[in-house]
Image 1 (cartoon, rainbow, N blue to C red):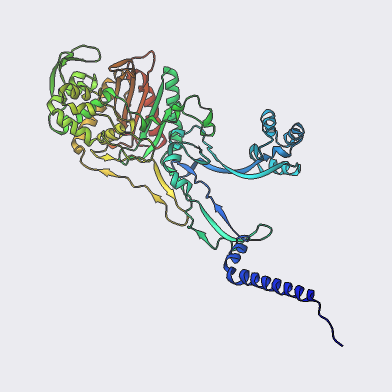
Image 2: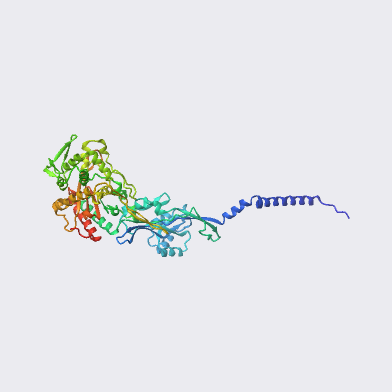
Length: 570
C-alpha cells in the first residue's frame, strides 16, 4: 500500500527544526558565550554593600584628679516620618501620634502632612525607645520609625567657645566651630563599607569579612580644660561684663611653665545644643585666638624686660619725667598728663608712665625692642589646636619711625591676640622660656596607647636673671601700687600689671572714645603655677582697668591657689 505524504508535514517539521536550532543557539549564547555576564548580574541581586559611618568621637574636659568630664558626645534614638500621599485624615493621624508623642507640634505636623507630592517628611526627632515603640504599635499606614544619632553637649555653655558645635554642611553633619571643627578628622573618622551576601530577608552573610578601604575609627579627645577652673572663670567674666555693661569679656588661665591651658572663656557665650537660637553669630568667634587687640599698658613689662635683658636699664635707672614727649610731631602723654620729675624704672611700672616706657625703648633701641617682640612670639601664631587663630599685627614698626616704636612700648599701635599675649607674659614667669600653648591633653585611641601632648618649650627668650628681676618689679607693683597697695596678698607673692587702651575707631583712622581694660598676673610669683589674663571691651562708668579687673583677677587667683592646694610662699 502506498501512502501519500502531505507537504504540510515537511513544512511543520522544518519550522520546528529551525525553532529548536534557534532555542539551542540562544541557550548556547546565554550559558556559554554570555555566562560571565549573567553570572555577575545574578550575583548583584544577592550581593550588597552597607556604609559604615563611625560614631563621632566624644570630647572631655580633664578634672584635677584625672577624671573625665563629658563636654560633647553622641546620643542615639529614633525619628518618626510620614508619607503624606498615604494620609487621608491628617487631623486623625495627629491626634493618634500626639497621644504617644506629647511634644508633637500640631501646626508643623499638619503643614508637613499637606505636602501630597512629597513621600517623606520627618515629624518628630530624638525620641526614646519607649516613645518610638508606642508610635510603631499604632500601626498607622504611611507612618514609619527609623533610628538616628545626634550630638549632645551635657555641659551646655561651659567651655562652648572652645568645644564648639556641629551642624549641617550640605547633607553632612560636621564640626562648625571650636575643637569640633579643628579636629573634625579625628572626631569623625573615615567612612567605610562592608560587602556581603544579602538573603531574601535582607540579612547579610559574610558580615565583616571584607572591609574596604579599611576602617579608620573615631577617637575621643581629652582637653586640658579643668571643669571647676572653667566654671570659676566663666562666672567671673559673666559677672564682670554685666556689672560694667561691657560689650565683651574674656580670659585665659595657663600653666606658664608648660603652656597647658586650664581655662579659656569668652562672655557672652552660647549653648551648643541650641546654636541655632543665638542672637548674634559673633558668639561663635573665639576672641582669644581670632581677634587682636591693642593691649595698652600691660605691654610695659615686656618693654621693661627687653631693657633689663639687654642691660640698657636696671630697676634703679632714672629719667626726668616731664609728663609728655613730642616725637615726630606727635605729643605723647602719661595717662594723667602729669610729670613726676626724676623717677626710677620701678616707678615707671608702679605708676604706669608712658614716658617711662618710651625712655626704656630709646635706651634699648627700636630695632632691639622689635627683636624681643619677635622672641616673645608676638608676630606668629602659636599653633594651638583651635580654628581661626590669627597672628599679631605689628606692621607699624616696619616704617622705622620712632613714634611707632614709642607707642608700641606702651601697647598702642600694635595688636595681638590674648593667647599670644599670655604666651609672651609666661616667659617673664618661667625663667625666660617661650612655651607653645596647648589645649588637647590627649587623644584616646582604641587598642593603642593614648596620643599624649608633650609640652614644647623654647629656651633663651630672656635670661633667668631678667625673668627674676622683672618678676620682682611686678610683685612690687601689686604690693605697693595696685589700688593703693590694698590688693597685696599677705600669703602669696603675686606679679601683675593692668592696662587701659583706647580702641581703634572701626569707622576710620584714629581712636574711638571707648576702651579695652586688661589685666595679667602670675603666682606664686617666683615659682609660678598659674598665669591669668583678663580683658573687657567698652566698659561703662569706670575709666581704668585697676578699678574694673583687680577684684575679678584676685578672685580667680585666690580660687586657683586654694583649689590646687598651693603652699604659701610668704
